[in-house]
Every structure is written in structure tokens, then in C-alpha cells.
Image (cartoon, rainbow, N blue to C red; front, side, top):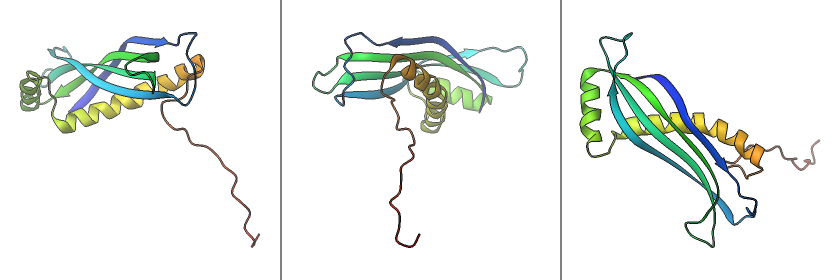
Length: 147
């Protein structure tokens, strides 16, 4: 398997004026693969091309109010894969049940997470939202007696 393309089709960020940035606002990350299609690419003749659509979202919900999203970031797009014919056949067969093989799903989820997290951090900064991942921090260490 080789990833030969990654494209965004939608980037959306919503932060209502009434959003209350408190510890009660817990960011929830969700990655889902929404569609899978066989595709053609004139440059690649001996491989199968598969296009997998994804949706990555970060929702900020108040812990006290279930299913109420205060703010949300949404990224949609697709990943284009070049696969061997047998590999593509297995993936297309599994997708009839809306499932991807576990190793493929893990690899693709990591690619989506990496690409979307970088953009999400920039949007969170612009909209003054708490970051959905923990960022590294520098802290002072207490001086030891030996110094």
C-alpha cells in the first residue's frame, strides 16, 4: 500500500459567542471513514487505485449537557491509495460491511490525525479554543543542593 494523495474537501470551524471556555468543555476527537471507491489514474497502470473519504472532528461539549456541542472543528477529505490487486480486492470486499482491515484503518487514522491536528491547532488558536491535545510545556525544576 502506498498513499499517493491526501486532499481536504471541507474545513469548518464554529465557535458560538456564548461558548464558555471552562474546564467543563471537554474536546472529543472523532475519525471516521465515510466512503470508499475504486478509482482510475492514467499514470499508474499495474496497480489498483482506491479513494477513501474521511471525516475528522473535534467537538467541545459541556460535561453537564450531553450531546450539546459548544464549538466544533470539522475536516473532510479523501486519501488516495495505490494497492496491489489482491489487496484492493480484500479492502473493497470488507467495505461492503463498512469495515476496513484493522492495520489499514490504524495507518490511515494516524495519517488523518497527523494532517488534521496541525490545522486544528492553528484554528483553535485563531478561535481561542482550548487545544484538543496536550502541548509540551517548559517548567522550572527545583534547585538541588549540589549546585
